[in-house]
Length: 260
Image (cartoon, rainbow, N blue to C red; front, side, top):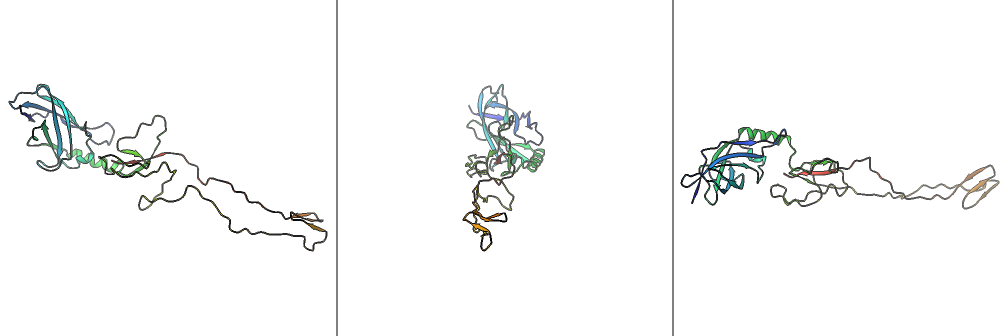
């Protein structure tokens, strides 16, 4: 029997905001009624695909996910974004449209309009306050009590990023941790230089000699000159190679990058 989705009852279509100040909306709580082709309420589990567009018909979906929905006397509740998280970029427009497809049926028409003016303003504010994609910052990974990296951040370990939701997908994350590197400012990014060690070569050494010459009461050898007046001089100098650190006092951190 062909099912029909009746969207006359949208009791709760509210963006659920996380409690953290400045956080982006990540869930939409949605409630509706599901009837069959004869208008009878459905009490079973059905597959429903939800999609968000910025146009009332046609266009390309901005977001989408399929959920297994349990309906009771036709009424069901879902949280959109629980399968595929809602990105803040979805809310950059004031008007959005929700497309709903039940099972293998075509998408319901018309799409439901979502008024998101306040949310687009919030998304714009968040976009200004959060770190941009590609931002690098220090992370105290080994400190007791520090949680795992949040979604959208990775360690800078020279790995190839595999994340289809990131614009950096397939690119190599710079290795900022395994090379004992420090960072410096520049007009661009990506260039590297310097060396992990270095040496100093002595090309010439000014050497002075003192000999007995015609000094009276003086005896000379290869090692020293003895003058009866009590003066000792001369000798052969030796140079010794020693290693030394040229680093200032430091504290180790783990560099991380925002990828989405």
